[in-house]
Image (cartoon, rainbow, N blue to C red; front, side, top):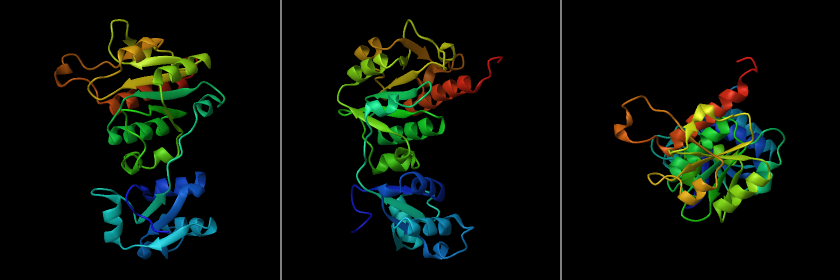
Length: 260
């Protein structure tokens, strides 16, 4: 079985590959490793990955530094290890609402740049979100480029692809989630005024056009992220930055003690 072909998804770097091995080893088709690191002591993280991959029965292939550089792409820090993955498996909406405790989800309305999607998936994973919902049409899907931009988070965080985002948001409401449109509107509150300890789904819109009116209408709250006074000449936040800021505020509130 060949690896590294067109359309295949790669996760690189010792940390992301190690986490993937621990959580979803069956998703890995093969792992490319730099032989100069593979045979070192297991105190080297790449050598430890080799040991774990052999124990899991995963195919290992030696590749020199130049081959790894080409596969990971310009500027990527692969640390001598790349995991190659099979077709992406989307989760079901029911999976996201089944977890105990207050939910924290992200829904994206037509985000088309796979790098932005990857960056949002990375932030959602790091800041404790339970999953991300994306539309099936006119939106970025989880591809190799998305996986790279997410630094492997796309393989660790449930992603649901839906045919109709408005209907999916209605289903979330039936499960007790409050939908928060993160965009400017006449009724928008500051993001810190939203009760982050509720079960929430943060809804963010496409690059440039933002959230569609029908989607915004179906949200329970609207929220804005304040900018410094007089600094709006360059426009609003990039959608991936806005997602990170909104998720951080929800995490901050959830981490706060009752007295704070």
